[in-house]
Image 1 (cartoon, helix red, strand yellow):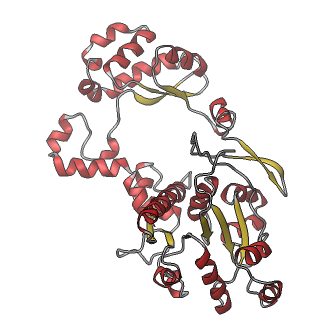
Image 2 (cartoon, helix red, strand yellow):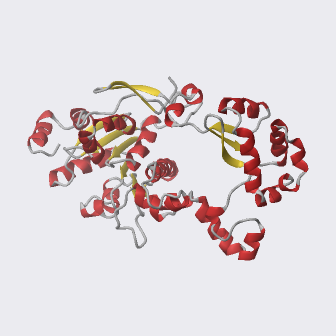
Image 3 (spheres, rainbow, N blue to C red):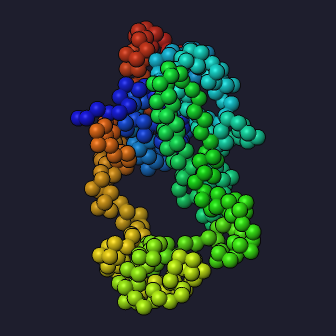
Length: 401
């Protein structure tokens, strides 16, 4: 087996729900030794599984490749044990509201004195600065305050995906790895501050484009480009859309003039390429509705599979719009090992997403299933911290672990 790229990096994960655990999933897949620390009753996501057992399978995704321990970090003795762990790890991941760790006496300023090389990665709704930094937040709050719910036309509905949590988790992992690289060069640890609102706004193309348009163009100039008013949410790209088929929908992209000519040829409408509406990108922007109607009239009379084969034959980017059952049978995802089977103690074999980052020389791997609550207490407190049996028994008796 090839070397895991983060082998030897020790991570203490005290996060809960989704954003922080997603960060440590990515680090663990790449070989980091992740210690998942939970309160004695379990972290919030585990508590949800007691009310809905189907969510138990979610823990298999969020906590694979981790060792599980329990510790009451609100007690004085628990804080002492926590500080002992901090001395031994490279990275701490937490996703509490900004200020919570400081109130516990375990903020970055305290912990960096114990371990100056510590990478302290904090994920929160609004980051550790600014007027909202003390506000608690969840995924829906970050999506709401970044404009994502507005552009997704879900201002009066729940988000359909935990988008802010997972993207913040990805940036948390990236920030952690960058900080580790910096430490290799300088020997210095640092605080990595990830705001869920920041990452959602940064990828909200509509909000960013609107700001750019408002800064650069007059309203008349925007209208002359074929854009309906100044609201960037009305910006659509020509021939970048999903079209109806006999049995579903298909996404088609034809951006360049060459792609448009190839598409029209296979549609049997090659002469349209000379028409003003189709002639160049500027005219296509101004005539999106006419173009989409023309393409829809063609696609709706063919099956999705027929269209995929036709479009593939002339190298037009396309893809079927899968429902949930179809995407879970996709041969491409199967070939890339994204339906990875793990053993679950309650449900037997279940399938979860495989390692996302594919690397030729140092690929990651899924080595262990999610731990049960406190499953590795004895191993971590004995082998990792060097506590003797008597001390471990005492901590258990006093309800610290």
